[in-house]
Length: 339
Image 1 (cartoon, helix red, strand yellow):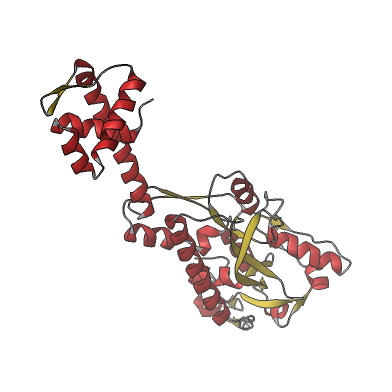
Image 2 (cartoon, one colour):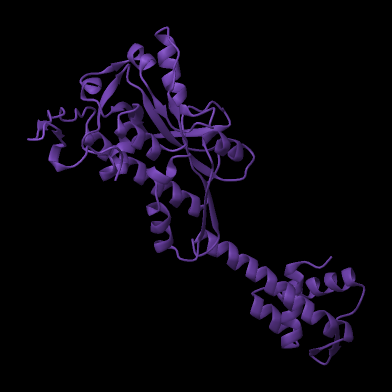
């Protein structure tokens, strides 16, 4: 079987018509070049050159071999260039795992930042929830991921990044006037997100805290996304539990008449970067880890500035108009959801 090294020697000798000239071009000793040609001839079972004076004349076998050798060398060089491009972040695909709420925590900024730096790179952010992502990591379908903790797998290296405190969210000022205990939480009319995700870490943490107080976590409404939970909480029909990071990220979609209070005991959504133990991450994945970590830390800083408590203003008594009918505050009906 011909080797790449032998084919390179053959092409140099074929083009230059001299083993000595081929050795000079390739930087080898002339006997080494001669030996490589002889080994190639033996493996192919055919003579490739005839000696004429001090030069070489290619045989018909050499003429037949030349285009195949050129294509083989070209393919090897293209493969090396492809690998080099990936290592230099010029091309290739970054497949990175993310947790379910990453669309809020990470948004598009992480991807856009990476694409602006490296336009030739293709990006895949994948994962319906952390359990699914951890399974894909175990199977080797991605190099690294950002997930919600906890995860118990000795085969994975876990690097915590962010502890996002959970708070009780309500449109009723009296319900967020002080810390909310597990006993109060057990009796609260709750709307919670991620209804179809049995392993949701937020819900699991709430259930554990309530059970430790001798109660069972109950919900009045279950939905799939945090935006809907906030709309329902804003209506006053139910309260919810969200992280400060979520409240920060939802920004002006959180109505002024909605407040929040810390839980007692304190509970957190915890996020970490994970990959297989001992893995050497590619430059592309390493960059993605850096960008995701920076984004989560920025959200963490902003969430801490938001504060663990916000008591909404108490409702103002309605004034009675001349007709004896109550007049809405501010000349319009109170907000019933997110505008």
